[in-house]
Length: 440
Image (cartoon, rainbow, N blue to C red):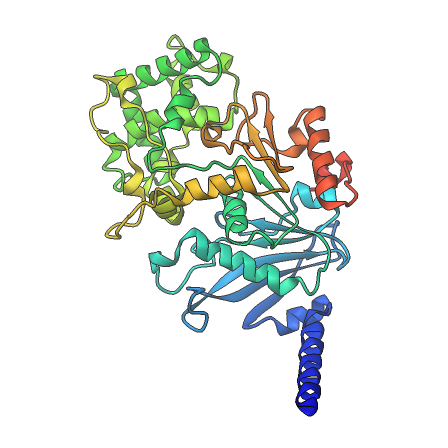
C-alpha cells in the first residue's frame, strides 16, 4: 500500500512538472518555429514595433472535429516586447494589410490582427456555409490566443470595429476568460433580419428639420427618376457595376435611394445644412446622392465581396430593412426589402432568433471589463448594447458621433473616462500622446 502511494506521488509529480513545463514562457521565435502547419513571412513593421509577421495558420474548419478539414487563416503579428500587453483585433471582415490600432498605441502593446473566416485569404477550399457561424469564429480567435499566451504572459485585450466589435462580443460570450479587457467600437447587436429598431432610430435621430430634408431629397430622386436614373446607369457602366442580384438596375436604383437615409446617418460625412435642396442643379443632387450612398454596396460586385457578411446577417447577426411606407406611390420595384438577395443563393437561410439575444444578455448583464463606444447619430447605434448589470463595464456615446467614432476623436472628458477605465481594468500605463496616434 505504501509503495502504491509513493508511486502515485511520483506519477503526480511528473504530471505537474510536465504541466509546469508546458506553461513556461517561450520566445517569439520559438513559437513561430513551432506553430502547427503555418507559413510565416517577415513583413515591414511600423516604427512602434521591433518586428512584424504575416502568418497563415491552419485552422479546423469545424472545431468540433479538429482532425477534419482545415483552412488557412491570415494573421498579422506586430511585436514590441514579450512583457508588454497584447491587443487582439478580431476583424469582422477581410484583413488585407497590417496596421496599428489606436489602442495598441495607447497601451504600447504588441498586436495580433486575425482575419475573419470566409473573408479575404481565410477561405476554405469549398464554401461549406454551415461552418460560418459565431461559435466557429470564436474558436478561431480562442485558438490563436492560446497559441501565443506562452509568448506573452501579460495583459490581453480584444478590440474590433463594427462587425469586428460584434466579434469581440461573441468571442467573449464563448470564451469569457480568454482576455483581461475588451473594447468594442460602434458594434450593433441585431435581433432579426429586419430589426425594427433601425427604422425607429431613423425617425428620431437628429432634428425634425434635418430628417425632413433627407426625406424630401429621397422623394425627389424617386419622383424624378427620368432625370436621375439615366445618370445612375451611366455611372454604373463607368464603374463596372451591375445589379442582377438585387433584381435589375431599376430596382437597384430604388434600393440605393432607400439606402441614402441610413448611409447619411451612419457616416455623417457632411452636415445636414449641406444637403442640396431641390433648387440645386441635377448634377449637384446626383453627385451628393452617389457620394453619400455608395452604389457599390448594392451592386453585384459589392455583394460578391460581402457575401459572407450577408450570410451571417441572414442567419445570426441580423440586419435592417427599409420603411417603404414613407414613399407610398413612389416605389415601383422594391416590394420586400429583406437582404436575402445578397446572401449566397441556393443555400438554406435559417435565422437564429435567440443567439444574439443571448450574447446581448451576456455582455449587458454579466460580463465585466468591457468598453463600448458608439456615435450618437450613427444609424448602427439603433441596436447598441445597453448595460443593465452591475459590472464595471462602461458605454461611451459621442455626441453627434458617426460610425467613425474612435477614442481619439471623443471629447476630452469622454477620452478621460475611457483611459481611466482601461487603467482600472488592466493596471498598465496609458500613453495619450497625439504624436503616437498621428503615426498610425
